[in-house]
Image (cartoon, rainbow, N blue to C red; front, side, top):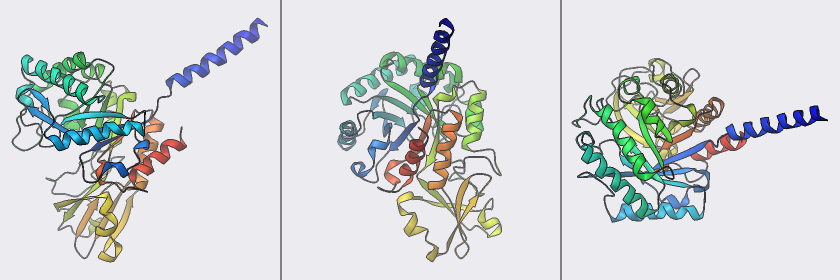
Length: 361
């Protein structure tokens, strides 16, 4: 009888342990506008991140009444999705011109942290996402960066966490390049204070590139940059994999003057423009000469138009589904994307992500 009791106890504890270790896969949407958010499947999200607030002096500030109204709308979505977390984001590409200077001083960090707490409390939001692009390494042209940013970013994170407490969430957007991962962040002390790091595993071939390639591949092919490569580098830095979120792109990048060798892949070219997911069917149709291709090494799609010499790199339903499965298989924290307003209202990339999550629950 005692042996049976011990055996039953063992199985119960094992089951409880397995349950405790299984975390929900987060689906996080950055939202900057483009389409009314009411018509999206908010119920399929765990987080929505309003983008962006900015620095006004040393204070975190929402820019205008329109943005304030949008934040209030996003918070109202909790009536549809009671588990939804609504976060505010600082900065963005071109949105952190004074970050290096403000966060270089104790006074600046303290005043910023207090203002974050105040704004968060005012809107009844659930925390902050830091999107400083970038500390330490070059980001937006002309924006200051310094080796001291690394130490100051750590001090900033500690100050913000102290002010907002652990009932609110704190995350940051990390560049997907090896240079950023190796140089910009003191990973151990920063991640001790973070709920997650949102790895920007997109724009890995950016607007200044002179050679085409996949801007948001799952695996590396022809270059070191990819979601999986970034994850491997973060884990090597000691980052808890449960706190790692990889990125998907709800837009693509068009390059012009690209010769037809390898259907335009890894060829010289010039960035032309971005195209949101919602416009793919009209702007990238077969009738206009675009032919779709799949890179089985990178697990990434691309288009090439031989008549126009245009190359297009992007995420599609298949690639975001594979990224989501990768997140689940690797035990990562989740998948995020830039940005919700560029998706289709129905049968878009969010739906593809959610379906994989549901099948694997």
